[in-house]
Length: 197
View 1 (cartoon, rainbow, N blue to C red):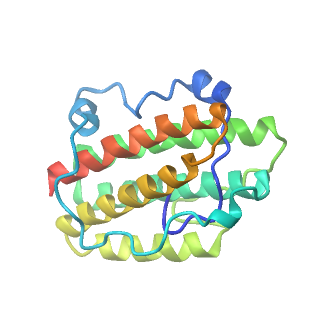
View 2: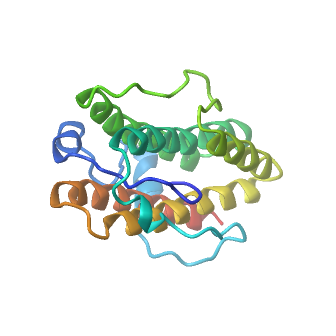
């Protein structure tokens, strides 16, 4: 999750099982490097400064939560796609593909609950104005240099980890199973970016 997420992530086990989310791996050979587990070793100068998910939204509307989440996953995908096109590197390609898997999990939940998917087809277009502004800033920052692009990846994944950890607090068992898998994926993504730093 990006920035200070405003919504708890209520996910169903059936979506994760159907989509096979198991740490966000992609089947290509370079993915093994990009997804290998490793403890975070460096701090990003773009480390998240906003507090994670506010406690008062723990019971907010499911539709709002899922709409925000799917655009948040799209933001990560789109940032990595743009920066990967600009700077090259398997880390951006592989993690962008993994973010697609995350979106697929949430899209299945949107369909299950008859919630309209807010995503635009175009890269870098968001209905949530906060996510639009964040996307614009992250792409601008990451366009300065390859090192800055890696820092943007670190920032996105650190923020995801903070938000998912907060969302896990008090989550129902079925939700917690999926959150833990998404969290493991974000930890792997962070480790992959940090190895590039």
